[in-house]
View (spheres, rainbow, N blue to C red):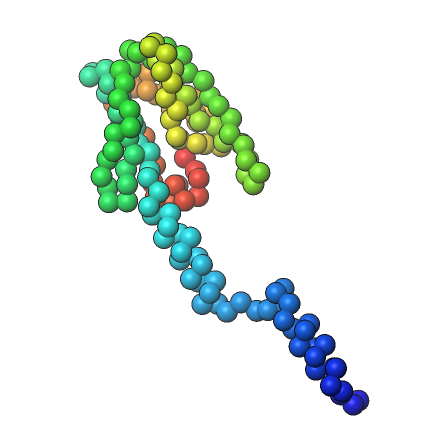
Length: 146
């Protein structure tokens, strides 16, 4: 079979399409490192409640472990609560509790979970347990679990 001038040009053009290129492992590894290392800088929500002091502190912990208090409220000021449904294009529904205080203020607790009962248990535990803490770990922050 004789190869002409145009044969090499056609073959070269086919090889240059983006879906025929092979990506080296080092670039896949670099992309993986960049995605997961950037999630270190996401703040993690935490909640600590004390029924003896009648106070709840809702704060975010940054990657150095420093706590930034987002909200402080009294347990006796909780009027009602509701569980909201968050859906997006790529995943299942996630539920999170919203607490309404007696002064009309609403606090959206950023503990998203795949279960309605888990989201309900967060608020029930705030109201019933003496000392209640909920912390979100680094890995749960990456993968979106509670």
